[in-house]
Length: 426
Image (cartoon, rainbow, N blue to C red; front, side):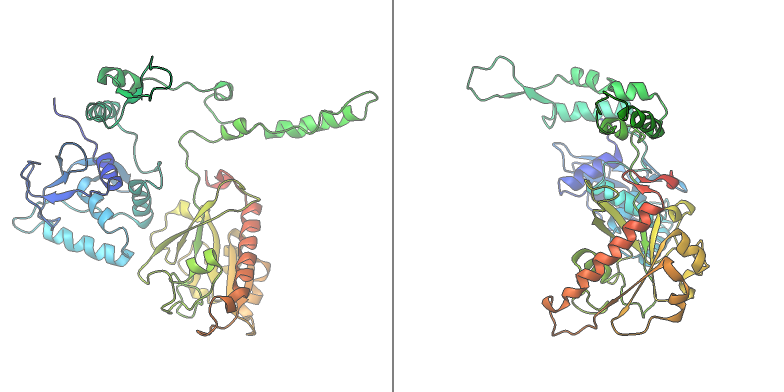
C-alpha cells in the first residue's frame, strides 16, 4: 500500500531539512526531469526523506484562504515569492496564470493569497509558528500513515531499552509500527483544572473581588490571622485560553509619505536597536522592497515572560475587517490623506482606537494638525542626521524609542490587551 503524504507537512519537512522540493514534469520520482517553470511542471519532487516521492501540483492542501482551499501549486508559488512585495507578487501571479493556459502548459490557476495569508503560511513552513488559523487539522488516517512511515524509516519512534546493565549506555529501539498507530489514535486527557473548567472557557476573576470583601472583613476580627492576599493559579489562568488558539499579533501602520522620517527601510532598526538612520541611507538595515516586517518586544505590564510579536505594514489594501481590531499604533506625518482608506478616516476617531505617533526633527516646530489631534498622538523628535556621528553620537535615539514603546504599552493596556492578546478581538 502506497504511503499517503500530506503536501503541507512534506513541504515543511523539506524546508526544515534544507532540501527544497524540485519542480518536475513527470510523476516518477526516480527519473523525474527537473523543470524551472512552474507553469510547465505537473509534479513536485521531494527528496528530503529516505525515499523520494512526488505529488501532483494540482493536489488540494489543508490551507484554506478567503477564496477556498488552496492547491499545492499556489502554496509552492506563494512560498517562492514570500519575500517579494505585494505588487510584484500580484504581477507574477498574473503572468504565471497567463502561461498556465498557453498550449503545452500544465493548466490550472495560481490563487492569489493576501499578504496576511502569505505571512501566516511562511511562518508555519519555516517552523517559527506551529499553529495557523488557515490550516485545517491533519486527517487522522494520513497522520497515522506519516507516523508509520517515519517509524519504519527509523526517523522517529525510538524509546530507551529496558533492563540495560547498570552503567551501560542506553541504546534505543524502535516502536512497532502497529503500536505507533495505536498511540497516534489515543485521546489526550486533561488535568483536573481543564475538567473542572468544562467545554467553555469561563473567567472566574470576578470571584476574587467578592472574596476580597469577605476576607477583608475577617482580617479585622479579633484573633483572626490573615492568610495573605488571594493568589491566582497560573494553571487556571492558562486554561482560560481556548485550546489551539494563537495570540493575535498587534499591527503597527507606517506612513507611506515620502516625507516620513520612518519608513519600512529604517523602522525595524529604529524600534529594535534604538538607532535612527535616514530611510534612503545605505545604512538602513531593511530592503526597500519589504512590505511586511516583524519585530518583537517585551511589554512588562502586559506579559513580562513572553515577548509580543508586532506586524509592521504601510498599506491597508489587503486589510480584512478583523485586522482593524489588532491595530495598536499609527505613525503619521500630520497629513490627513494617509487615513483616506482607513476604517476610521477621521483622525480624532482613529486615534481613539489606536495610538498616533509623530516623529520629527529635534528643534523643528510641531505641525498644527498634530497639535490639534491632542493627547491621542505621541509626539517625539530625533536629532538631525549626520553621517559623521556614528552610533555613539546617536545615543539620544534610544531614549526617544523607549518613550515611544512606553506610550504604545500604556495605550495597549488601556484598550484591553493582555498576555493572551486583545479581548475585543476574540
